[in-house]
Each structure stands twice: as C-alpha cells, then as structure tokens.
Image (cartoon, one colour):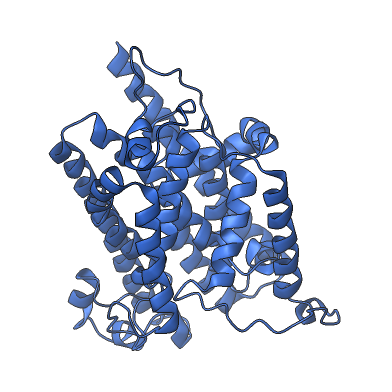
Length: 399
C-alpha cells in the first residue's frame, strides 16, 4: 500500500543502547539531536512487496501454471502474509514516525485520506467484478465460485458490499487494511507511551485467543465464518511489522543479524517447504514427514506466522537482499511495490478476466503465454507511467 521508499526514502542510524521502551520508540522518529540523520535509500521492502503482489496476482488464477511456482507451494504462508507484514512496516515509516514531527491531527488526517483512497479502490474492484460477471454470464457460462450468488443474480445486496458487510472472494484484503489503518493512530499513541513490548504482548494475546476460538471475527454476510482475513488475528502481523520498523530504525535500517537465528529461520523454512510442497500434484511420492493440519489462514495460524516472520527476518537482515534490490530485477519489483495499491487493483481485475478467459476458451500453452505476458506488460506499463508522473511532480515541487 503506502510505499516504503515514497514514505521516507531513508533509514536512520542506530540509536544509543540507553534508549529503551517508549524512549526507544521516540528515538526512532528519524530526528537526532543537533542535526538531521543521514539518509540512505533502501529498496528491500518495496522489492519484496512487489514480488508478493505478482505472486498474489498469479495465485488468484487457479488455471495459471505459474502458480505452481509461487511461495505457497514451498511454505505454510503465502504472499498475503508478506503483504500485511510489510503494510505494518511501511505504515510506521509513513505515519508512525511522523507523529513525533507533525501535529497529531495532521497525521490522522493523512491516515483517513489513505483509508478513503483504499475504500475507493475497493469499491472500484467490487463494481467491476459484479458488472463483469453479470454481463459475461449472458454470453458464456460462469462457474458459481466466481461470485457469490447473492451478488451474481441480484443487486439488492450491493449496499452491504459498499458498507463492507459483505466481502466477495478475492476482495477481502483491502478491507482488512482499512481496519488496521483506522486503528493505527491509537496504536502509535500507545507505542510511544509504553514501548513495543507491552503492545506486542497485548496484540499477541488477542491473536492467541482468536486461534483458540476462531468464531471471534467480523461478520460477513456472504460467509457465516466471517471475514476471510480475521482482523482480530491478522492485526498481530501488522503490529509485528510496525515494531520491526522501529527495531530496524535503531540498527541502520536493517534487522540485526544473528547467525544462529538466521540458521534457525532457514531450518524452519526448509521444514515448511517439505511439508507444503504439492508432491502428489507434481506426480512425486509424498515426502512430508508429518501431517500439519494447523495452517488455518483465516486466523493466521502459528505455522503461517512463523513462516512469514522467518522469511522477513532473512531478507531484512541480509546485505545480499540489499544488493539484489538495487539491481535491475530488484528495481523492477520495487517499482511495483511503490505503487502497490494500483498494482493490486489492476492485478485483481486482470485476474478476473484471466480466470474467465481460461474457463471459457481453454488453458493451452498459447493462452497461458498470452494471458501472463499481457498481464505483466499492462502492470509494468502502468507502474512506469505512475513513476514518471511522480518524478515530474517532484521536479515541479523543487522548481
């Protein structure tokens, strides 16, 4: 969503070890005594988010052969967990540190404007989805799982979609982000007064309660189980992202590297890969050493949480990841990450048409190449144009 590079374009040097608790949070505001801290550009967060966005686009088309190579095939977590964790990280950089430099109401107003923008894009996707399905079904068959019957066969319930009381499939992550951003100002207020650890403790306790009782969820008129991304559970991942940004700000913009911890992360990711790989889908014998049923995505199960945290730690503590993000491929992914809202919105719409085309006109190699290349070109063209406009706007402000 809000770009890491756009939000701050920098990281701050490590603060003194004397800063702890609430004082450490204030020290991460990006302002040092006497003069401003030197600024160093870090593209890792945007590049990782760009990769996650492309994987989400691919995963939302079941017939796409590329989704056999996304991270959900080699881990308990998938791109959605990466997306939400990075949203928390970037939100602290974009808004959390601003609370120490700007009037609170001014920052709150920025947050509300961002929520409004998210709501507009959510509404756009919902309207396009409903209109497309209702029109398409007059010419070609549309499977029932493309859109809930309550919306596919009538518009009487459209108001529920507008009020986020009804969340259609594949249109449920932006509402989660809206809720998390609406709660971000109070979260920052508490973080600056008591420090990260009490906040993490309370947030983790709520996540644990929801994992024991999954019925604790926001209502969804289209699904009796509630929101697909339960905000009461997923808030923990968002808070972890914000606290990781605080910690990284005290260590030059990177998470402190511990080789034993990195080794443990690699070991867990290897276990996760073996347990999650679709062995039988590839015509291979099942090599999983044990059954792992506790991977519920709705409540962000512990196995999924550990998976994304290990991946994030290895990236944000790695100088190799820094160098990759500065290369050509990393910069391309960072460009997608800088415009994540637009990329997610266009990608979701393209996913819908890709699924419809595959369903009605076949999934042969020619169609696979056409759909994937066309989608990538459209996304790349849009982000390059957005980058160009941003550069022109910055040049105009400097003039």
